[in-house]
Length: 215
Image (cartoon, rainbow, N blue to C red; front, side):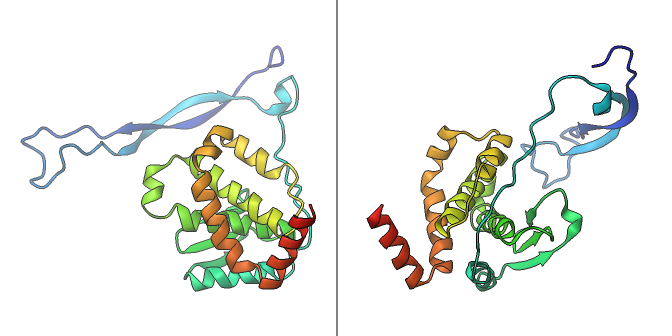
């Protein structure tokens, strides 16, 4: 913080919990073990500082450097999602998010390169396949984002995209790590296989196997 700078006053929300009713006042069918629901109880004054008022090194920026040719794989994954009754829409209002999974619908941010849009679509498709049912309640956001991005990385590499550091940066942003990846390895591999099976033709699979044998 630069010496002499004054903070900018803003109003921040205060989240609290509704007090439980006494047993005599509870509704007949109320679940007494249920956790109280969070609710907005008011606002309080807090002070923030603009980046120009601070000193020190710049914050690291998320590196989105995916490149390569997607070819027909984009159309194939869209067809796969349609077969799963998952709709696809484009909407700039989701920015700064590149994609959002709503359960039965994926929304992508327009303006991405073909390679970036493809990887984003695979990421959100992974959420649809993995995290819109019972598994969502059994996992944390860190687990869900790590799993989805790991699938996106595997599929992106499998179709020949240069993934750069985008996936590792994304996983680190959500505090994911190697241990978490290891714990989720089975579901990551299974989901990657489902998506790859849907978008790779027999010819592509044969070409990849041939390359693997040479390597």
